[in-house]
Image 1 (tube, rainbow, N blue to C red):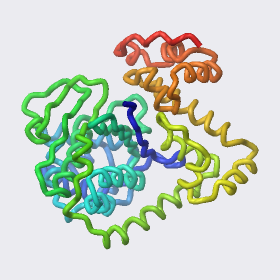
Image 2 (image 1 turned 120 degrees about the vertical axis):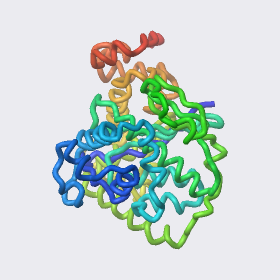
Image 3 (image 1 turned 90 degrees about the vertical axis):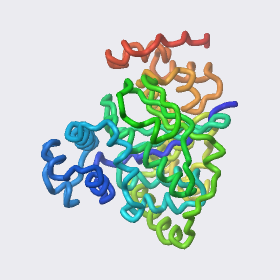
Length: 360
């Protein structure tokens, strides 16, 4: 069975600007740290705490490293979110907590995170497992701090437990870092933990995602969701139509044949209207699809942990041979050749040899 993947991406016009919500500072206080100490350790101004300043991904990473250095407690990453009271949740988290099911909760979390944070979720369903990976597009090659990964995974766990009002556990956790003594991760998450994995991943049982939420509140969702959707729409309308189409394509691709009708529906317009607007910009839907696949292919091949056959699937090619032919037309070389010359030296040393491409 092929994996089905959904991408929840920050839009291409989103700047690297993160506004740390009140729930972050509440979590900080719950683990015994003061905002002032953390900001001083991170060399950031106090206006970040007052909400007057945004932070970049690099600065956010610096804050999380400061938390680790000041706490000297390997358990505080997951405790950070597990100890925050529901009443302190940001409105976007309330939309996730009051969803109908655990699946809808995770999808709302991924979708509305775009409004306040530069994070990207990839949700892959394969068989009876659902794999959730989180990345930070503006981080470059810098890995996310371990505490930040733990906090994000703990947030998804807490949503499931608080929503279903059961001791819901993921199937397993995969962490790229080496093991650390007395971090309490296995005990808290209640599942096996694999260290030195190729990527950080949160793996759930597909059946658990269908569990209904006891906290479901349709009236609250009717108040919150339209506001969030409007903000997402406003963010998209600041883009030109070509950027909007490519943004939607990046979310729809992954082993599926995305067509203009699907994109038009995502953008809330008719297929003929979309065709007219694309033509008015002097291009075609086919060309935009080709450009989007090229951009995504370079992104995935730049990640040593993504196999070439997986990259082919993730950009919408079911047949790897078709992907190899397309990539050769884009770059004048095979995916393996491009990866060998374009990966950072560190990644090349850490990665396993790429598979030889099939003959085109």
